[in-house]
Amino acid sequence: MLGVFVLVATLLVGGCGGSGDTPAVSKIAFQSKRDGNYEIYVMNANGSGPTRLTNNPAEDKDPSWSPDRKHLAFASNRDGNFQIYVMNADGTGQTRLTNNPADDDEPSWSPDGAHLAFVSYRDGNDEIYVMNADGSGQTRLTNNPAGSYDPSWSPDGEHLAFASYRDGSDDLYVMNANGSAPTRLTNNAGAYEPSWAPDGTHLAFVSYRNGGGGDIYVMKADGTAQTQLTNYPAGNYAPCWSPDSKRLAFESYRDGGNGEIYVMNADGTGLTNLTNNPAYDSHASW
Image (cartoon, rainbow, N blue to C red):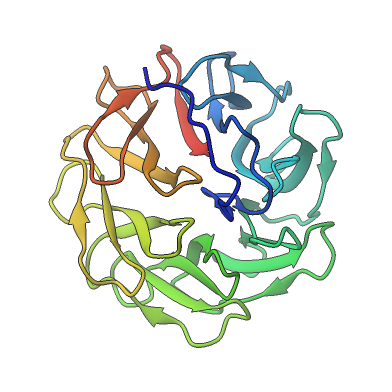
């Protein structure tokens, strides 16, 4: 197991969550079926101390840390269909933010903590929206019949990376935070699930370009220097950066067909298993 990671106070951004004050010991939130259905858990960055935060017969998924690490946004279908909720870091104060007959999920905090990007099916296909952190001001950012999904904020808050099928394959794009000027980063790469590094220099993502299950890749923020980090046919998904941009947590099916959380160095070395459970553990948020 990896040791506990001590983070220097100069870090500005936390992986898959935004910017702000970072506690001395980083935590990884994740979703797990170990208690019969998807619930949100949190564990230390070395895999120890897994703690259940939600307890609901419905599904709770897609955790995303707020920049100050005081809250987690997540999606739940406890009220009939998936909607966006927020709770305190200890699981208390669970509050619904969206209320729509279509599904809302995949929340992603802006680096200043003022907004959440999310995916909604309310207009007939998956599109990316943004709202204030209290759920007000819900605004559509993308409008394409092919759909857009997997939003990830840049550390400066000026851009959103996302995935879309708009050009005939799953590829990654970047747009301004107001939805303007979408620019394609990958080309026929079978790519999705982008995750912006906290230092702003790279994006991790999943690609099917080599066949079989997905693998984790990394590229520069402008789409160049695309590099494969994992190579395992069972599938590797949902990469998420550590707050210091030196490691990536991700989900892998290499241990008997169920998802587990792993961590590796940003160059693909030092692979370490963090969870070990016969049920699914997935969708890490560092």
